[in-house]
Length: 290
Image (cartoon, rainbow, N blue to C red):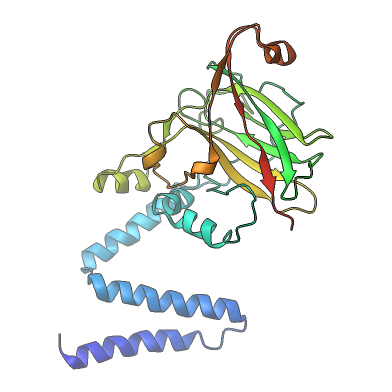
């Protein structure tokens, strides 16, 4: 490439950057100018053919077509599988405060799920019965009463309610509140490993690059308490084979739990209404003050 060509390309970049110089919002101006510089640098580095660039445009167009307002968000899935979601999460939670580690939000959260009583069963489909319980605390050890835990997980078929129209409304979802001592209890089923959806552009990307689509078994939590930062996290099954190769890079060692076996005559079985053997997992959440 001639020196003149390189200079012309760089001049184009600077012209586009300058076009945003009058953006009234300073943060937006920074974002747009940085985006242009990095995108132009990427294009100069890889030198895509026009056909490759149109393939990229079609990929993004197809990604948008797979999104809806309620259940499917293919752009979140794309961000997750490229590690961008976890990078944004890490940047926004850099301070080592002792609070529970965060992780990705995921694309299958549904607002407005039913309020559940302490220990209520959220599983309307078969699975290995489980009790997940513990406390919600502040970083100074203070129990957080009336904290709201929004919970969701997949059924044994590896799909979320809403995503799977055969599941009852609200299956394996619900909003729990802590008691005066900050305690919560959820009757559910042991979560299972599952593949992220592969019927869209993200699935085609994973296949083309030789990556698997599997996520290790986990339970999603979004926890709110007055005067504290909202916590979005997962609790993972420590025995899951995909912990080291999560398709969305969301695993952190501090978020792993054991699902220990409990017999039908266990004291917890009587308290929470299990009529046979079940698994128990304990996890305490620690929230940062806002």
